[in-house]
Length: 634
Image (tube, rainbow, N blue to C red; front, side, top):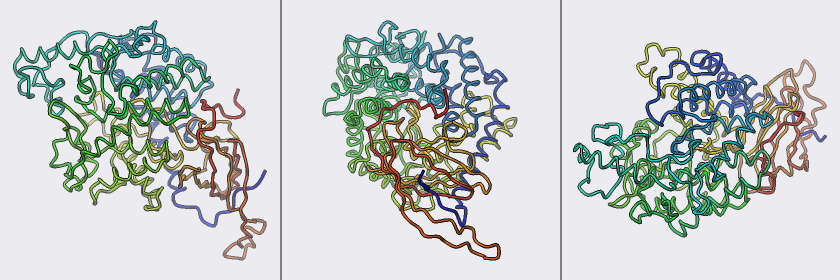
């Protein structure tokens, strides 16, 4: 075996901070576990459910626990993930919200949020037959028309609400007037545009008009909608176990159906039960449930379309489906205008105001998120997750230009490493991209410091929950989840944070602790991906232990779609290290470049206080993606 490491004269600060972050996440995670879950994995203090909503809220507080394990978190993180998934699933089943362990039926904006936790467990331990069986059973709900969700003749999902009970009628079991007194929904405006006599939100103060709005919302809840594209992640997750042709064929056909209906234009947001785009919306390309008009527009449509396109690209090795999202982005950017968050009427401006702080008062670029009867509206800052994932996946110059334009629209004084955090645990894409581009070399240290601060705040909120008026809110657990993975995913995995409404947990590199035959970095080892391009990646590995040798295996990312084929590193002749006891500085041996050819199986031995900076040549889209069982496991 060719040696690829060299002795360290100093332990880099980023490596120490990263290992500290792993330790602190685990300590805080155990506080959350002991405080808010029962021994059998249920969440404490869950109220009764009154409608179809709420399943996602019980899974979301744990969405990134399996990802933490996969990056190198301790075995207990995976064991607790499984225990909690089982407990919450039993809890929801008893509440009548699940059938055969799956959501009875709700929209995929929310189902996608629930899926993250389950799919993360599948990726973390594909050898667990229980989860493999569930993955196939859940996917079959949408692949097999016999379950009532998929209409094979028209190539659509039959309803906005779908799941274990098949296509569910309407938006709830009863029709309740959609009245103007729903203050929390006022920022999103009218759910349906163009109804006679209902032009403004205040028109819904009329009981008759409020009832008519609700009845029309329920009537139009037929056929397919854009956010259903996230259901392809169930099929892709099942396919990653064994390459099942049925799952792959369904993903191809279903996503291709949306591509055909979009043509060269913007993807419509609904397909009627007759298979015709917009047939439930008077022929318009906008107006569907969770579509371009209501409630979030591009925030939900763009993410779901991207999730579907990425799953299509994963199983076909062809990135052409990404044009679904490029067309959307280009349309929004063409309508961009200057403006500040504070002065905008953007429906989600509260989160951006918290993220930007004082910079929310400064001008930046605003794009329209929604389209309705009067054209484009609801202008706000362009969320970076979509353009970031586009570039990360394709590494194309054109997608890089889209991303750079989006980043250039951030207010000039905005701190790109601000201690902002919401339930998606994302939002620092700009600072990370600056680092990868060589413009922000201090990002690793500052981001890790920020992440440690996030944990400290979340833990303080947990310990002070007796005085917190929000502690009884269903979303409280999401708000205080102390597991921080965004920065670890960036620096260790070389990837953006997972797409929150149903994306799969792709990374640029995958690691294995060879001695323990489990995924993730070994104890004491820190990793820093500092270069990503069309040819490969650069990653620095550091063993922070001064007594233990650690051995790490590296493989290509995107679940093995990419393959590491060559590694080059500067290697020092360390025969004279550390030198005589009376010398202050150890001698530096001759440095040479060592190159190792491999077939996606690179093993690096790191003696105590050793490191390496690997230049990896990666053959992109040449592998066979699968959930990976570490060497040595059955």
